[in-house]
Image (cartoon, rainbow, N blue to C red; front, side):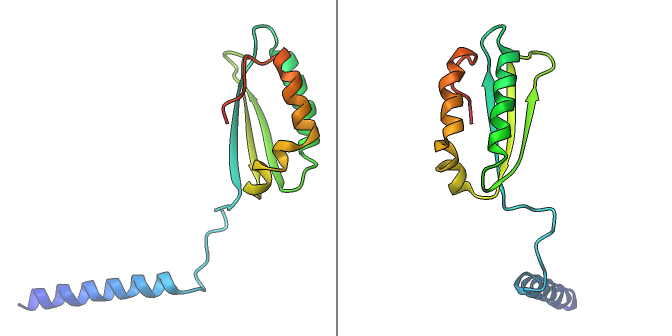
Amino acid sequence: MKLITTLTASLLLLVSTAFITGCNPAIKQPDNISNNIIVLVIYKTQPSTAEEAVAELTQLIEKVQQEPHFVKLTLHVDPNDNTNIMLYEEWSDATYYNSDHMNTVHLQEFIKKSVNFLAGPPDI
């Protein structure tokens, strides 16, 4: 009986501590957790057009970096197959990314030109 009482008291203490800690506004979210959105854009180029695709993407990135809510963008080319290209994008506002960014003149122009060097639309 004493063991059950001790276990019950320990469980109550543990639950109480967890509740108090979870409700304490002084306990903040760790600094390394971000509320930004991450977008991965995967491109496949047409054969022999990887260099042109990278050049066009580099020009596009220069313009994208000037947009509001832009945080970071990194271009990656597969070292084993340069027809595989990935953009790692970070934005501070998902609504902006999904609407205003997608309708920018520079992105729309890139999309039109991309039929000359991409194998199809990207996977986002």
